[in-house]
Image (tube, rainbow, N blue to C red; front, side):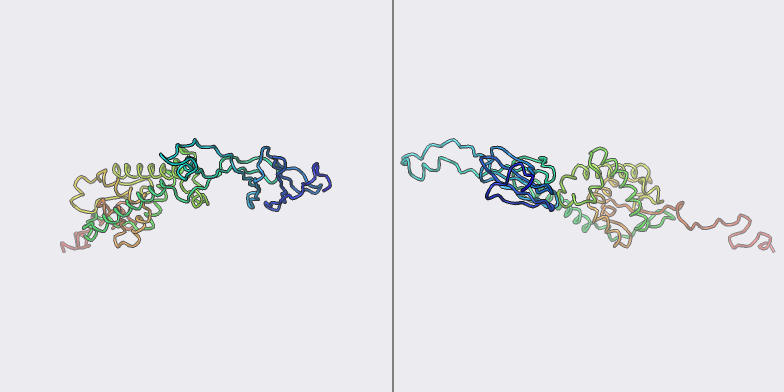
Length: 329
């Protein structure tokens, strides 16, 4: 073609990547990749000491070309033949251990020819054994929490709310939870260096375990600050902003007026580690999730925060609403 510094050799192959036509060939131990330009065929990339079995594949959507070639095998140390076996017997043939072929992999830009990656090609399973261990631990813990929730006898008992308090509606609790989660998520992103926006991207589907540091840091921060603030003041940051608080659900737990630390830790661990269990409050008549049942707690609107407070009776009126003079007459 016109303008080509080196004409294409016979038997060349062609790869495509995002509309780019990439002819390539291996000759004299050298892999060469060209690209079609208005001026003609122009060289794009090359690799020396490439075997004849090397190949090039276009990666559509990435604007790259993938180069794959077999790696030179390492000869294993011969083993001794089986005792008494002849030199050419099958027992002697087992002296060379079979080795799986290994490949090298490289990616170059289909536009500039810049090498973007090079390394050993390997096929990772969808889930590694460690991933299975983590999933088994998560599902096992989930089953234990569900069993504790089902077996709790006080799940069906009537609640003993503080005087003048009312149950906090689910909408208020969801809003309070969002106000508790967002600051913890932002701080966890600063500590781990992982952008919280990746939780809303395709990274969750393609590489979920890369977000493990961000998730663990977020869980630690949100559980820690919610548990400590509810233990100390009865409400977290979000609950204080929307006007609700956590209180004991039974009269015998309301001795000193403050929750135990294990109660706030238990309810927040269940609520944040297993978010689907936390949403079960939407189907509970008392708006309680399994964490509340386990910790014997309930979320209420205190009397001071209630929207409808009874009007104070006029000091000049008696209990029957009449003036003192009317009663005397």
